[in-house]
Length: 431
Image (cartoon, rainbow, N blue to C red; front, side, top):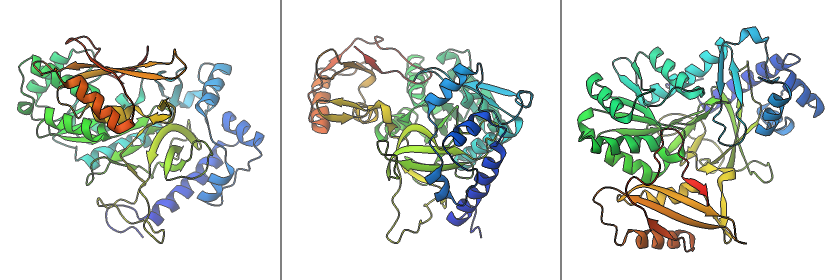
């Protein structure tokens, strides 16, 4: 039985198995993509347990989905119902290959809204709050879903699309916004513009900043910088993907820990090289409630670290009372983001953690050069206005050497040189 406000581990696993059986039964033979895929793999459509599902059902790769949409344009065959049942169309960013178009039925959309409402409940956002969505409303799923879920939660929702940063700040002043939703990078940028506009961020009354789209919200140094720039605001991290939906919420009791919303997702973690279960590795997701356009054992490419279980194997409740899978440090990076520099594995999040530890740095860019036999990195930093820069580059170089045992050259560029980002930052570039 459920104890307290959150389901027990046994409750969660029972619900997941029930939903999984219902989902798989719904797919055959209606969903042509999975009917073909599973039949060719010799997989029968029965599921005796969660372990049975993980052992027998194959992974789904993004490359398969892209190929399916190219072969069967424009929406592919991963559709469980006739096209007339679908009322929503969204698209991935395409920053990692060809974009995917994703359709949803009203039922799937409502189920994903419930996931976002769980995020808002965990954060404490609801009736009486005023939420600014500080991004341009494009074809990406998260913007629309978060906005509509916040409205369902009873909050006053303000769309910030099509406005400059200065105009968004004025909207915050006039409308009494107390919750901000954006990327971590844009929260940094908005604070930078506030300083230029002579607006003290603490006077805006922002109490909560929900960040997503990048790992920055769970990077301690980035979080600390945001909390410094936005005094009195609590930073809450969250992550999701257009093709899977809103996946995690940050633990209210432990900053930097993300809980998978297991009422909607069956989550696994595997060694990306072997495909075997692991504590640290790639996050695999099955969308339990998005029946109209589902994903079974989808390789997300997200690198995570699961909280280890105590001796005896029984999972204990988190400090917040949840039994949902806990990811220490949130999304650590992308499996395919790792760069090997002279034998050393380097993830962008590790570099950001070091750079954001310097309050003097406003923005940075990493140049990756593979022109020679060995990959090399160079870092450019743009200082905040008035910062002393005499020793800044040398200090960063020493920090990089201590962390990676590598010499990574650092140069200082003039103010306004490096680009600013509203959406996902693209700080790593090929030189």
